[in-house]
Length: 180
Image (cartoon, rainbow, N blue to C red; front, side, top):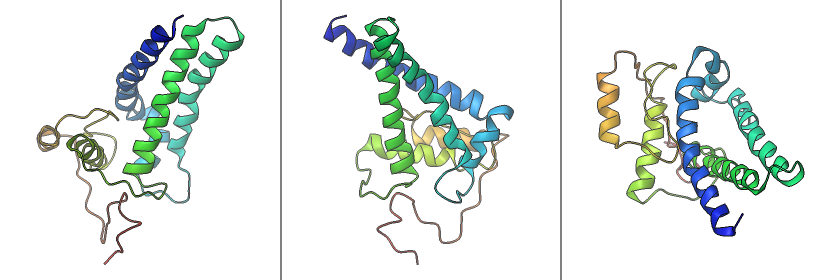
């Protein structure tokens, strides 16, 4: 496979992973069965890890299998490029979702672009709902406009909006701004 074809397959895989991640997040993680692990992500975390982190291990398995199969089992270069695309999406997800949005690792990144602000706000709106029903914005690198998401929340019969926490501080800025 040529380098250009490989890079194209890699890029296609990264984009396709957004659709796959959306579907898994919406219809698996927020299902009764998937909620067993994912619920921990919608609650206050106690300690470094949460049950939801097991999804990272589950989703890494196809990437590892594809890369291994492409390198050692004769599956072909396509498997390496697809496996690398899945892994890259996972890295982007971790950096954006766990580090920037949820502040699991201290950083100094402040969303400034309209796109970046919209993605962060959309994910925070996803977490504004109490429980698994009525949530909005299941993607990670694409989100509808914040106005559209507000309309969806307002018109939802299932959404129970979470009460604000006392003295809550945006997790992405918590390490720089002292709580009052």
